[in-house]
Image (cartoon, rainbow, N blue to C red; front, side):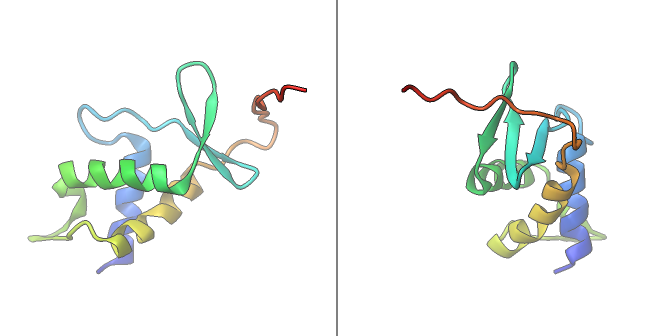
Length: 104
C-alpha cells in the first residue's frame, strides 16, 4: 500500500475535490477535532471521523486508485488517511471555540 495514496485521499476528502462532496469543515484545536454543524464547531472523536471517511472512500474508488490498481478500504488504509485530515484541519491560532456551559 502506498502511504502517498492514502495521504492524497485524505487531502481530497478535506478539500471536497469530487462532485457532490463539499469541503469538510473540520478543525483541530487543542488536540481535538471539531466539525461545523451549521452554527458552531462541535467536538468529534477520531472514530466518528474514521467512520465518515470510510463511507466516503467506499463510494469514491477513483480516490483509492493508483493506475489500474484500486486500494481496498482497510483499517490500515484509514489509519494512513488520518494524518492528512488532522494536518489539514489545523485551526488558526486565534480561533476560539465555544465551550459547553456546565450547570452548577
